[in-house]
Image 1: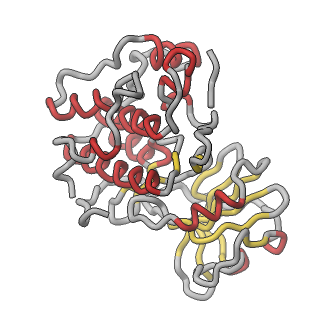
Image 2: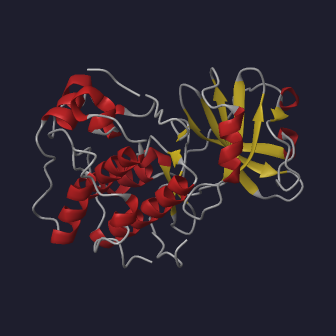
Image 3: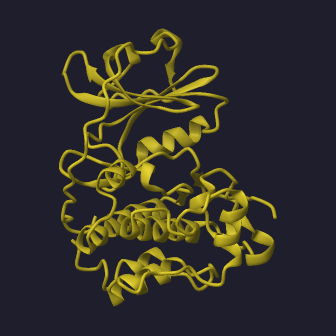
Length: 308
């Protein structure tokens, strides 16, 4: 198998999440003076990286680090994401991210680049990610899940209007601010739809069947349905408190994931859930992308439509 290619005010989510760990000793990074803005914007609150003072490390991965920073003049707080790798996001795509204006998507204020790195100045989401919250609370009640699903759908609708496929909807890419509002983040796997080319990056466990095995499921659409599938996996995970497409105790390796996503006839949905919940998840996790619920349809689904 080949791996391929605002409505009215929302009811806030309120979570009790452990604060992110404080790291002593901030790692050394390239000098801020080596970076230049990909597209100078006089309206941005951050004109150069020298405007920011690093406070703590919020997270580290194989490709970079996210810092909690403070603007030296205004004392406003920001997240600074430094990606150290071959540039997988072009400056055109980075500039597009700066133009996204939605209360359902983490705001990108500025992008700075040098020959091998990108720095994103982002809205600070103080309460961490949905993944952090699931580790702390394990499962969520239906009203919280439905509000979360509504906010993600609102964000996906805005992205679709801009012809952007996110490509990596998962708990660690859904961030929560101090008001308890969930927002979509991390566009490292996103694509601006121009030629129907969706790309192969993303997290396999949350990929849709047509992305994992296009030969079997066909892949003639532009990829928006894949984001809906990922949302369904996230919603079901919030209900079960674990990754839902493999059995308890199974190691979610490549073979098991491919079998669960592409081979099993249907995704198992717990009968303990309400009828509305089960129908919503079923509409998201329809394996045939041509029959899967669309973002606009799902926003009017009884499970989420009153969460506004």
